[in-house]
Image 1 (cartoon, helix red, strand yellow):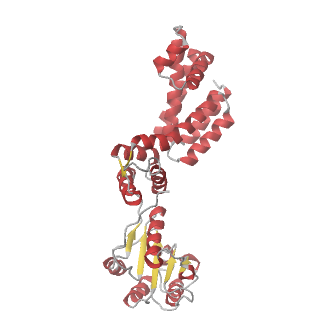
Image 2 (tube, helix red, strand yellow):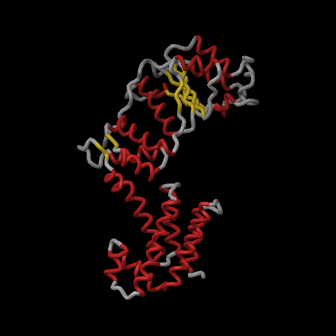
Length: 349
């Protein structure tokens, strides 16, 4: 399997590092960087200590600094990771004066930073972080601030291109990056998972193409959607609903793709019915509507005969109303689709 390359460290780590932001993928990446910078490929063992600031009682900062200052008996270096550390900086909570030192946690950290323990690194992982404090400025000068903010949807393609180059030494073609972003969105962990898989698709090729994305990523969504539509064609509501569960588990942002695919399918049945009424042979209907593969084409034509023109038009109208409801925030898209599935399978007028 392709090994993810990591950026070389620009220098020794400062004695304190803050990883700030809600993106779990970046948090894990930065923690991995810290671990490799200090322990290399060795098992840190007792030298890697994790604490939760919210479970340390009334003097959490004192407990944390005591842990940092206590040498590890079985490791030459020590890293104390406080994750999450948000409780330290909440007003009315640990942000108030510490019971023992009568100082705020920020003040205690500022003092510690002036005289840190040699051979120890303190890592604070927080969802939010104030950039206007003395502590931030002192850490920023030392390179101790790591931003773990999530990316936006419009940034996903560019991020994926950078990640492919840095982590997998692959060029992600712009069209492939856009398609990957369309399919996955801005979920960095899922984007990275797909890039790891795509990097193995053609190991000798320097670039990841849109063909590869369609084959390995797009196919998953398409196959699952067609499985759901297949169950819908057979009026098997339990199976269709189970497939919807699988689709949403695979991609929580798939609502428009799934609804659009069902709408397209119903529209195909409607158009097929019109051609059936014109007494066109099945092969010609498949050709005119570009129905493929043959088994799917036959299901569409069979449903067209079963529903009749009025039935096909009725379900097409129902899909249109559902689509309008989704786009106007009238109900949840998934629930609307599930309702449509149950009604169609039950033959509700």
